[in-house]
Figure 1: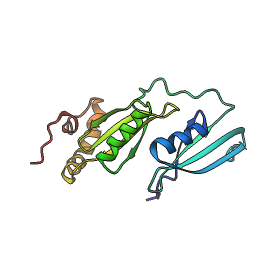
Figure 2: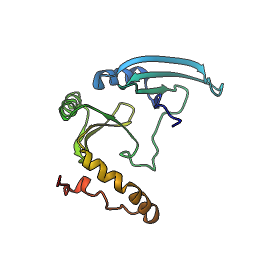
Figure 3: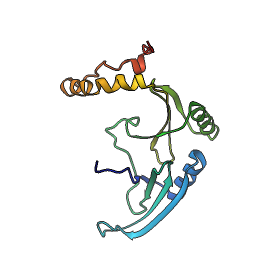
Figure 4: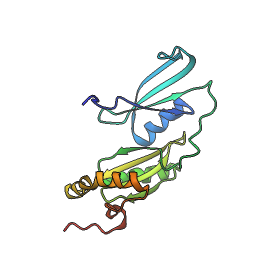
Length: 179
């Protein structure tokens, strides 16, 4: 395989300092690196920026760019705000629920936990308007095998019909049993 891992994922932010402080405070991420230039290294365009990097665990890096000379950031108005999000894994349901309580105590609106059968999730927004998801895995080997067996059938049916295939509806309709 060509790809070893994701080196970092970068998003735009409104305020680099506020963003770093928010992720450190609310998600316990460590601030690992800041890079600032007045010229984009790849294009040589004059465009000052602050690029900050946060440790998202297990060698995963979440990065942000503050671009003070650019128009204010916005989101794709043609895409619902629940679609574009960053999902990060936590170790347990207890951690998920404790984090939800901590976020809510800080005045952050949180949706969930939502039961996806193979994982449970909470959803909220960072100060830049980026939707975040925290998820804890709850799937069994049998569940994962069932999903693996139908993935291509589902994708092919979707490609032909653009209607949701029903092969894995058990994930959200409560019909799954461990028989």
